[in-house]
Amino acid sequence: MKIRLACILSLICCMVLSCNHEDEPESNTSSKEKKTFDVAGVKFNMIFVEGDTFTMGADTAIDRDFWGDEIPVHKVILSDYYIGELEVTQALWKKVLNTIPSDNYKGAGTSDKYPVENVSWNDCQRFIAKLNEMTQKHFAMPTEAQWEFAAKGGKKSQSYKYSGGDAMKVVGWCSDDNKKETTETGKRRPNELGLYDMSGNVREWCVDVYADYDTTLQVDPAGPATALASSERVARGGSFDDPAFYCRNSFRAKSLPTSKLKYVGLRLVMKAEDAY
Image: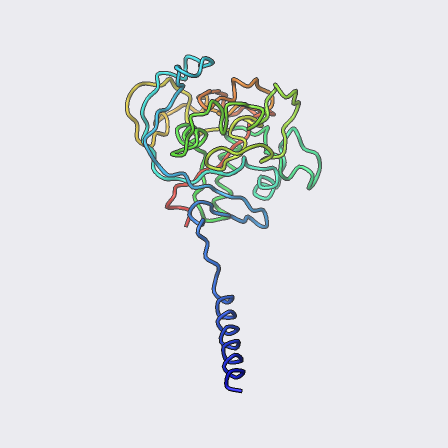
């Protein structure tokens, strides 16, 4: 009888402890690595990028496709930041600005996971301003240095030619696939940080004014401090409409800030301290 009573008491204690454990909030060990934001029902993830010193520009010893504006290589020091796991989607753009400017629009709901494109640099600034108003956060366009460091895999870099691998067909979409339009985001292999489509699908606007590199050590660079409204802006990553060598991590494209192209979209960043 005593043994049976002891067993019953032990079972009750286990049940109580189990219930108390279930009431506790789940621990999120990856909360620093990935932040999820919800904008009126549209969720998106921002991935943590630990700052470091890296070499920006083309490694000409292994990359024979480099262009003249990808050199000279130079050292850049970056602080911690977050960057979008995916390119900004049509669903998020529509939720923020209530428009879908994209050339590749297939109808309500159908194109939600496709990257927004056909948006100018100026359009993207308006989008970000409205997004920040809605979320009370401080999202931004990446600097060219932030974009390249993340594309190369940050501190986890394996020195790939493209973002996530040395074979473009594994990591992203380009004209070599005979693609005529964009593809849903996140359909090919991510890079070392877990970022999708950094190579291909759509080029991504950066905040910087386009300018030649120099060899000076830079700390959290944002490009030239002053610029004319008509100054060309940088776009990185290549697109479905570009050959593979345009999708290399170090390739630099440029367009006027008023240009709206069916192969150019954007990705968001945020300072690490603004993510909380």
